[in-house]
Image (cartoon, rainbow, N blue to C red; front, side, top):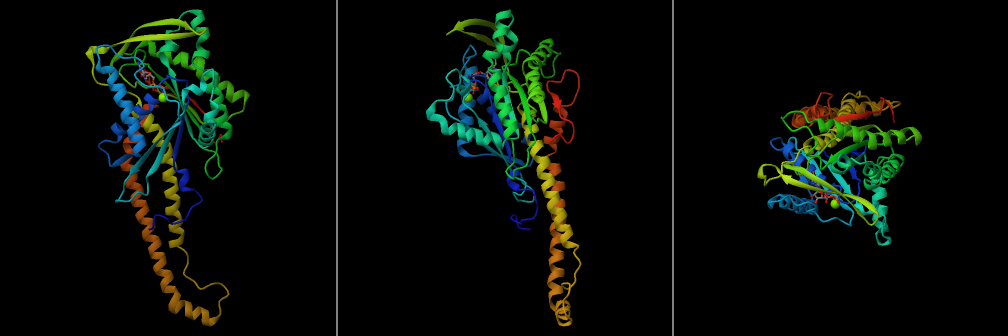
Length: 405
Ligand SMILES: Nc1nc2c(ncn2[C@@H]2O[C@H](COP(=O)(O)OP(=O)(O)O)[C@@H](O)[C@H]2O)c(=O)[nH]1
Ligand SMILES: [Mg+2]
């Protein structure tokens, strides 16, 4: 079967995962992107599924990894090793489950990283107005919004005036405005509504998560409660008051560095704004990053598009079946001569054509069975990550009723 066979109502262009990262400057957006790439590589290593990057994306990830690795290279962990970005950055990956040597099931995964300065007091500079248009255009066609949350700021605000300053420091109103605009503009390339998931990702959270394979950390419950109080509640309010449509809210803490622990958090006032300045120490003299959460986040992003991809190709296989089972008969109303001609000449072509459709259907069904095997690691990780069990790091915070769109 040719890869370009035009058969179904679903546009293959829709089989792309588009994700937008929103959050203030320095919250950890670019580090989160890098950890997502680490997670994809770890999850797909040892499977036949390829993770591909375009060259600029590979370069950006190399730079970011080098900066994060460098923050652990010195005796003290270096806070703020990364340079903030003023540019809108597009990360382009593709997930390619190569089956029988063909790229039929390859799908792009594109993440747009907004410059955090847009949420600052000065907003978007006029010189970047075009960037804003690109951002809005992309936002309308994204099916997922990733919201990194500075867990250290959230958890270390203990005094009343610090807690009161949290919405301003974390720019929660700006985040909610982006969610609102997104849910209202959201459409697929064929104009149909897209699934909409908000993923709340606490970052800088290593001190507050359940350690992998260790005892439960009571701080993990407090972090979850604070995320609920400041973010889930605001999202639910949007759902109720603005009638926005949302499919799911997920909770996915991500450690982009790993072996560091908070030693102190100083609160200082700068330009009339309260600021949290954390200090960390390395755990056990660590020199290598040990990120966590990137695999689960990657699995979730892929699982969503894989569902769409499977149903697209099952629909194609079904179309092939209907073509293979069409009756071989002359056109209705054909005269005697036309009928005779049909059975003598055309019928053979038609029969050959049906055999080809049957072969294409069988081949597709075989490939789909191989696809399921190839991506089983992704599907299993996604299912296990977000299931409801005690001391799970990850959670589904909200799930719309079936048929909500
Ligand atoms: N302790 C800790 N620091 C982090 C983590 N992720 C990011 N950072 C720090 O936060 C700084 C800003 O991160 P960056 O990804 O550039 O933020 P962005 O401006 O939102 O893109 C980096 O220099 C890192 O040192 C994390 O998981 N833990
Ligand atoms: Mg950045």
